[in-house]
Image (cartoon, rainbow, N blue to C red):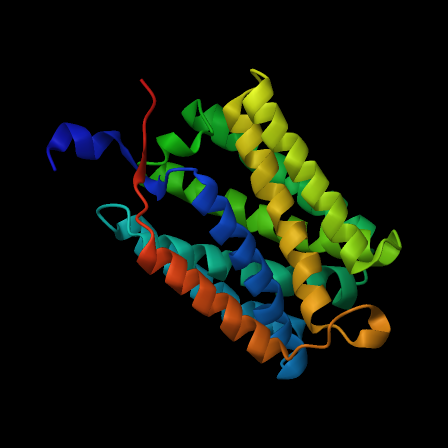
Length: 252
């Protein structure tokens, strides 16, 4: 690969249909894996958050130091972000007593602040521009906030709003469909639509993950969290190894 082409490539994948399929699977895995550690293993929310935070930081460091886009490393980092997001949101909402509304409001403010500071610092929050260590740091911090926000928002919708897991899944699926419609039928900013979809896939994964492993009496399917996590991880691995993903190119 020549130097000019390499410099025009991002460290993240092109946003395709496959990207969103893996993203939803990864966010669902984050919910079941996070709950496996904090609940099934009885590690608690704080201890689980500490463990997954170390894994997330290590994955981000590996991603930043990588010379080019590596699909396996990228999706491992996404999984790490969504898992720590699950336990961190649960810790804030339940252990700290902030509640779903309080946690969602705080995390939304943090997400918006991250995007604003990123934009003011580098002039763009487009994923195609994620080619420098500074841009990558903003990217992964923003993703961590979005994953944590999604967990709180999903739980708020399913529990506090009383929609249940299936109702929550329908709501977020419908919102994602509207974003997709806006992408194909309007001239709205592609960057705004991307981040809207990225945020919405997390609460969708949260309610789907809860639907899989929560008891029948609570409206779930009562699947083993370990089994659900293993199936989701296997699906992601197959997708990453089977289908070719290209690095996102800078728009000219």
